[in-house]
Amino acid sequence: MNQSLNKIKGFYLESLLTFLWRQWSVLGVSGYGGDKECRIVDPEALLLFSCTAARYDPRLFDEIINWLCANGNLINVQRLKKIMNSYNFSGASVLSAVASFMARRHKFLKWEGLTRSPEAGSRESLFFLKDGRTMKQFGKNDPVFFKQGYLRGKVEIRKKLDPIKTGSNNCLTVKLRFLFGINARSEIILYLLAKGESHPSKIAGETYYSQKTVQDTLVAMERSGLVRLTASGREKHYWLDNKKWSEFLMLDGKLEGWMNRPLFFNALEELWLKLNQKSFLNLDSEMQSSELRELMRGIRPKIEKAGFPGVLSDDKLYLGEFWMPVFKSDMKKLITNLQ
Image 1: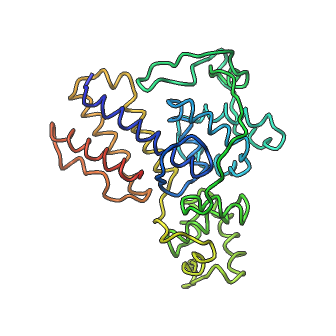
Image 2: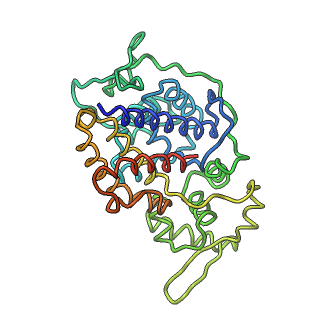
Image 3: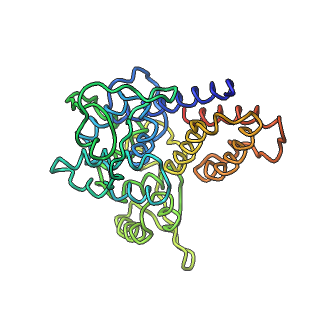
């Protein structure tokens, strides 16, 4: 195995887990000792990505379930389905198990729509050590996860949660949901604040709602006088008075630019799955370099469309052995954009 690449894999996983802890701690998950926050939280994208990465940190995984049992009503299940249908997240089957666990409670029956029927007789360990080996299980299997095809100890729900940090800009999505409900309004306002004036079809594509839903919602919101409309012929663009909205929402300083989190997380997951692929790790250095080049060529458009143009290098400019140092540099730049 390429030891240098193995170190990159370990560094990447640790960086992803640190990022996830920071994001969930903004929402009130306890247990993260750092004081640095990062990026506005997208609850649905965060949950879906966590169903892949948090399998390497059982404590984080169970803290997420603990949070969901108290705050699962803040998750937009329909939007979560839309994101799942848009991208092939590998954690979809784990999410099915989580949804099955949630749906046992009467107030979370809507989660039943996220469950899938597992393959008959198929069972695998839910958790892994950071070196990729299966984590040893203690105690009896949790019956809900077992039925969904995953082996793990019984889930223990705790009552302790930290407050949701609604005073933080990073928690703006949830703050807007407390104000407007679990619907398209929250993401529309967030998008217009972060991105600026835009057309309904563009907003729909970036926020993962249907164009009709966004169009109808914007028409209704514009009648309030607080969402503005600029029309040029048949083209209609909506916008906000950011200064007034920032004061109303008590934002702390300037809001970060728009980031398509589901798309960005999907690209990050693709990279992790490749680095964690056993057949890939057993290749010689030349073949590994070739496959990484092909992978980065595929995810670069996603990273750029997600809101980070120019972060990844153009592989055509670096041939042969000159590519691997560039890949390592690009990895560090990706991690920096998680900060």
